[in-house]
Structure formats: structure tokens, C-alpha cells
Length: 632
Image 1 (tube, helix red, strand yellow):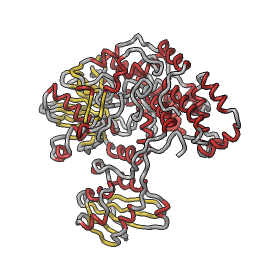
Image 2 (cartoon, one colour):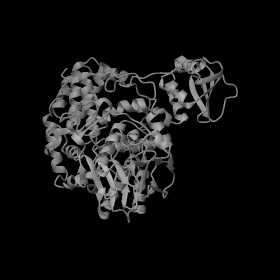
Image 3 (cartoon, helix red, strand yellow):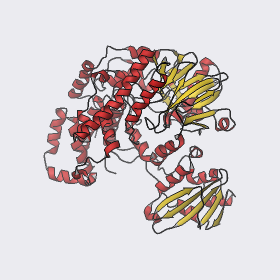
Image 4 (spheres, helix red, strand yellow):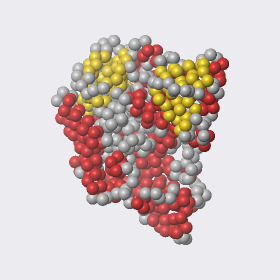
């Protein structure tokens, strides 16, 4: 089967040309604003790590230099992809700077009396260090006095070690400020469901796709995620209530809590001295996700809309500039308030109308076909679905309120995908491929994907079905306005044609992340890894005494299930272990056995000292590159 991408079909070229007539391409103001305040680009457009490892290269996107979109890219997405090429150091206003286009997210830098406050550290340490170095090259070698995390997503904290060190934090040189619940939400989302979320994120961001007109062009929020080292510095100061203020390095910051919005733990902040309102990731230059394609809990967009309205009430009569941790700022109070009002109504409109249509008995797929934005929103570039879409966001609203189940008992307990596909193929009989090819020629790609997906699941060796399924996915990708939809469709086509690249098995948490995680999250992760068949009939009680944290964890294995209680010992443990959390983390990271800890004096045990190693032998490892568009 051919593995190279194919050109746009005539139906795709026609669909993409129609976009030019439907949207206000005459409005080019964003191109000037995306460059406003530009001081210097990222040198050579490149970020490198240890040993010269390439982490980021904007040269991959040189093809975006042409203004006109090729037939293989939706013109609206092409426009955003070109805007997201703006990169380097920018002055927002005197004393406030942003580094953009060095990673998926932005780093905002506020100058203080002795140093700088860094707001969000980017995705990886290499990008964080490069962003800070670019600032210092043009503004002087000011020390970092504080690091602020606006919310609990990795593209905003993963670069922490590139900005400051753990010693800086422990010795009080750098404050780390975060919203209440930051560590708990980070652990729950990025650890417990981390393996499937990582795999799904490949489809969202398209990292395995070649960059190009027939490949990945953007990720909506920015170009893509970098390939560096994700790190974390734990917070030293939590913001718990709206209206809390901090004066850090002579700079006053006023905080607005915004939990259960774009992230479960998120906050906005206002800088009175600069009249700058930072909306974190709750208002970006597009429609965001109510559930990202990588997976997450369904977000409460009623609360999200209200958080935007509250920001308008608290700061709307003061703020002159609006920044966010993706995309470019807005200058001027009137424009700022108009933008916030449309963002507020964008999220509330989809929320309300999805529920209105559900009240008429429409199912998720029917709601997503019916729901449309009013022209006042649909014609605003900042409301277009480059990251989230009206279609999948409407389904997310349904899921949040009414679950995955559409109330039709026929869908209550359907056959699993492979079994259902085989029965369908048996019923369809001959002639399916000829009909599907005719539909493909007519541009009915959605249906061709649905039908060919069934044939592939019924028989993954059916190369004819795989090829047509890949071709139809590809055309859907070329037509998609959403960067995430494009990436998903094109990666599906690539994997149908060439298979899934191998990855290393994962069963461990990285040692550099473990110290920042709570014991509850770490022990829950061990419970997720338990293989029930291996644990059948076993009943062990293990007490862990962590002397460096003055913490006790009572761990119980029973009914092929691991549970734990934090803060109280068991009545009669099979083994009681005294060690440090740091030594225990070596067990979790797989770098030491319990016997090795005993031998080196890093742990002691009362009772059956063989139990800890036996327990860890019950735990699973995972192949993260599992099949998605073919059967597992």
C-alpha cells in the first residue's frame, strides 16, 4: 500500500475554496497585532537541548511563507498557522514581555524591582531556558524572583527546571505560585490516565506527522509541543480565593480563581501597575475544547463562561491590555471588553443550545449537526474552531450532563468493535467496496470512513479497505478547519498505511516528576497498574513510614484491588517499612528493588520483608503505542 500522502481530491479543493467566500479574509488586523511589540525572533528558530538534541525547529514550517493556502489545507486553518509563526520576544507594555512561538504556549515575563516574575514555564525545560535566555539577551540578566503557574496543564509547568532550580525554591530565592488544587488535579489527569492520554495526544497534536502542506501545519494553540524534558517545581504558595493579592518583587498581582474551566485548577491574574489582565487559557484566539481529543473530564462551560463574565466585572473598568498564555494580546479597553463578551457568549451559547436540543430528544450526533453559531460569533476569527469545534464541544456538553448513553437501549450494551464489525460485514455481503469507491468519488468521505473502519476492524489484513479508509481520512483532514481534527485524520491515514511505530513499554513514573506528586497520587498509580490475575487470593497489609515527610501510608491488597489510607497505620500489618519518600520513589521508578534498599540501609522492615518486592511484581507495564484505527 502506498504510504506517501496523496493530493487533494476535486471535492476537497472545491470545499476549501468555498471557505474563502464564507469567512472575512479581508480582515487582516490579527497579522499586525501578532507582530506588535516584536523585539527579536528566536535565534535560527531553533531550541536545542543537551548534546545538541533538537527540541524545536520553526524551519520545519517554512512552507507557510506563502499567503495562499494549497488545496490540501483549509484556508482558515492556513491563516491561523501563519499567524502562529510569529515568534520571539515581544514587549506587551513597558515592564511586561512575552516569549511566543518557542513552544506550544507563551511565557509571560513581568519585570520586578530586583528580578523577573515568570508566568508559565512552557512545556519542557529546554524551551523554558531558551525563552528566558532570549529575554535576558535583550533585557539583561535579571534573576527569576517568582514562577507563577496559571493552571495545571503540562505546557504551562513542564519547563520549570529551565527557569529555576529546586534549590532556588527550597532556599527561598524563587516563589512558586499556583491555584489551589494544582498538584491534585495535575496528578489525577496526567498520571492516572497518563498512558492512554499520551497515545491520544499523538492524534491531537500530530507529532508523528511530517510538517508540510499534506501533513501537520499547526496545533491550534500554537505550532506543536516540543520534544524536550518535562519537569515540575512544586508550588510554595497557593491562591485559594478570588481577590487574593500578592506583592512579589515589588509587583502587585490580583488573582481571580477560575476552577473547573479550561483546567480543573486555573486562575486569572491582573497587574494593576501595568493595567494588564492575564486570562490564562480561558480566552484564546479560537474556540477551545470542552473535552480535548486527548481526553479529559468534560469541562463545565457554564462555569467557564461565568468566569469570563466575572473577569469583566472585576477588571473590565481598569484593564487596558489583555494577554493569555497562548496567541497574541489585545490592546485597548473597548476592544478588550468586546472580545471578552464574545468569548463569554461563545461558551455559553454552545452549552445552552446543546441542552435545548437535547430537551427536544436529539442525540449527540444529531445535536452536533444541528447546532450552529450566530453570525456575530461565527464571523469572528477568535471564535473559530481551530482547537475545539462546535461539533465535538456540543457532544461534550451532552456527556457532562447526560453521560455517554443516548437513552436508546439499542446502544446500551452493543457488541465490541471487532465482533460488531464482523457481523456487519457478514450481513453486507459483496459489492461493498464498489459502492464505497463510488461514494468516495462523490466526496462522501465521512461515510466512507465509517464503513471502511468497520471492514478494517472485521479484517485488519483487508488492504483494499485499509487503503480506501486511509484515503477518506486524508481528505477529511485536508478539509478540516480544526488543527486537531486535521492532525487526527492525517495520523489515522498514516497509521492505516504504514502501521504504528513501536514504543518502549511504560509502567513507571519518571524519577524527576515523582518528588512533586502527593503520596495519594503515587499510590493510586500503583493501584492502576495492578494485574488482577496475579493478585487473586492474596491479602497483604503494608505500612509505609516516610521519615522525611513524617507521613504514614497504610496500603491494603485484597480482592485483587489495592487501596490505601494516608495518615494512619494498619492494626496488624504484614510488613511495616520505615524509609524515606525519596527511597520509595526509587522503587516506583524501577531503579531499585526493596531488597536493594534494605541492603544499603535505605529502608528497614518489621514483619515479612519479602512482601514489598512481591507486590511490585504484581504490577503491569504498558505499550503506549497501542493501535487506535485498527483492532488492539
